[in-house]
Structures are given as C-alpha cells and as structure tokens.
Image (cartoon, rainbow, N blue to C red; front, side, top):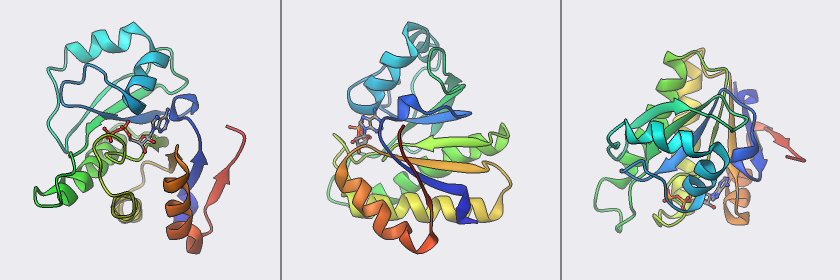
Amino acid sequence: MTDKIQLLHGDITKIKADAIVNAANSSLLGGGGVDGAIHKAAGYQLLNECKLLKGCKTGEAKLTNGYMLPAKYVIHTVGPIWSGGYNNEANLLQSCYLSALTIALDNKFGKIAFPNISTGVYGYPKKEAASIAINTTIDFIKKHEYPKQIIFALFDNENLALYNEILVKYNCDFLKNY
Ligand code: ADP
C-alpha cells in the first residue's frame, strides 16, 4: 500500500504527474513560495484560469490546467494560517489533503504530488503538518483506487528529515535526480 508513496527532495514544478497540488492563498491569484513558483512555471494562462474561479475557501480545493508545467493539472488548495492551534487548523489542513485527493479520485488521476502545505509563510509546525499529511494520505489510499501514486515534494531540509523519519518504516522509494 505505501509503495504508492514516494519522497522527492526538490522542486514540485519539475514533476511530471497528472496533477501537482498548489499551496495557494484564498484569492487563488498567486503569491510567494510554492504558489509563486507554480505560477511562474505554468505561465500567464494559469492566472487567467484562476481569475475565473473566484477564490477558494481554506481547506477546499479547485482544479485547473497545468499549462506550461510538466504536470497536466494543478489542484489548488488553501491551507490554514497557523494561529496557535486554536482555530481548527488541524482539521482544515487535513481537509486540504482530503479535498485534493478527492479531486484526484474523481478524475482518476494516477499520479499526484503534494508540497508541504501551510509549512512556509503560513507557519504551521512542520512536524504536526507532516503527520497530518502522511496519515490522511495513507488512510485515503487504503480505501480508494486513485490516485495510484503520491509524491511528497520536500523542498526544505527540515521537512525532508521529518518525512523520512515518519515514513522510514514503510520503505518508501526516494526519488533522486529530479
Ligand atoms: P504556505 O503559505 O501554505 O505556508 P509556502 O509556499 O510558503 O506555503 O510553503 C509551503 C511549503 O512549500 C514550504 O515547506 C516550502 O518550503 C515549500 N516550497 C516552496 N517552494 C517550493 C517548490 N518550488 N517546490 C516544492 N515545495 C516548495
């Protein structure tokens, strides 16, 4: 079952997949971090399509084309801003992963890639975010046929270490040279 999960140390915009997930903000009109990188790599047509979506609520997700990205589609989700854990952040973060996975299931996407949602400028503690991401994903893939392969794109060394620590017992593939 967890042979469906792979770890990649690097840039999500380089991944050839059915979809990559974007940690967007609620306007869906681009921003910094992974959002900025995805918009830059996808080109102006992504912003044009995003403008038609009229934003996205925290914990929800919306689908667009991938344009100039190697990935065919982008699943935009809006992570919670960490505010001490008193604002339902854990449920909202879990909902981001579930909403994105459900879009992948509905569209029969074989391969999707996640960034570490909310762990950049949104300030979610990385350890807690990693266990939510991994537990939610493993639960989902136990129950559903799609997606068939999930890549966690780990950009910073702290997330890389955390995901390795949690997933080591599952013997996940580590994708190199991306
Ligand atoms: P958020 O606002 O949800 O916190 P950020 O983009 O600030 O989103 O950060 C989310 C995570 O994405 C961080 O762990 C950051 O290291 C990572 N990240 C930034 N750029 C990229 C990229 N090009 N590919 C993959 N992950 C990235």
